[in-house]
Image (cartoon, rainbow, N blue to C red; front, top):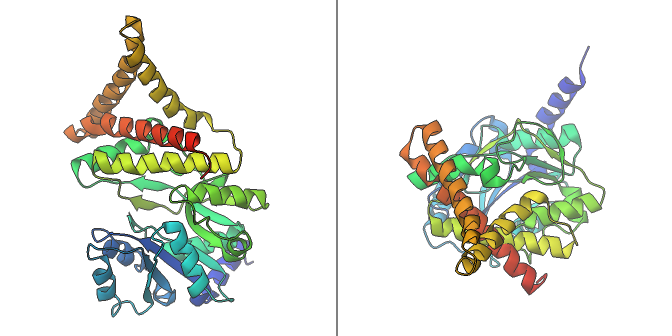
Length: 339
């Protein structure tokens, strides 16, 4: 007796790879782009027939040259130029110019990542199996430098990401948001793709419109990727400041109510500021920032001991940078309005 799972596997094997479009938005990713592409092409020969498009936003660090050097090895690899620079625009551009009417699935592959063998095929299979509008996946952070390691160790904990299901999560199921991996192109086109006015948080804003249109988003915890986190305090601060701004724009655009885990960094920032300003007049107020710093210090020591590495002592610094930067971005964008 043929099971439903066996039927699905046969269908996936028979799927014309040209009906799948894989896209890598990139901007100054010379350090990661080759490992990213090679990881995506590792596995079944089927993958070598899937159109894989790198959409570059104007790299000046050698990314373009690396991609071009790989084209003879991977004839399915293509390069496009994205004058708008943003990832949201990169995905939309690739769909508009590279996905023909017969294309069924879109797989988004971020350049700052290393993917498991057969990733593209696995995402296409999950889209077919679940018939979801989108497939999202967990990210497993892994660092190389000392600060990247500390960043990676803390970001997948509640003190880092606030417990987001797609940050190191292990349970599959339907969710309201997650890290984008695959799309049903009919849904993507019907709701207008990504909002190109969003430089960050375009994924959450897209997910909101999918839900409003009656689509479902499936988190497949069996498909994972390795994410390389930012390697300096300044880079991490810029990243999370922009994340905060993007989330605020999504909240304002769709008149959402922020979740508790999203409010905690804002309360932490406001609490620390109020404590510092009030302390000269009311000394006990200093307990607010002092308490927060104590939590970060304890986290640093804990991570350092668990990982048996002095790099773990930077975990609190990474966590605090995420919290404060995200909260500052959220507050500033909220004051500025939806645009």
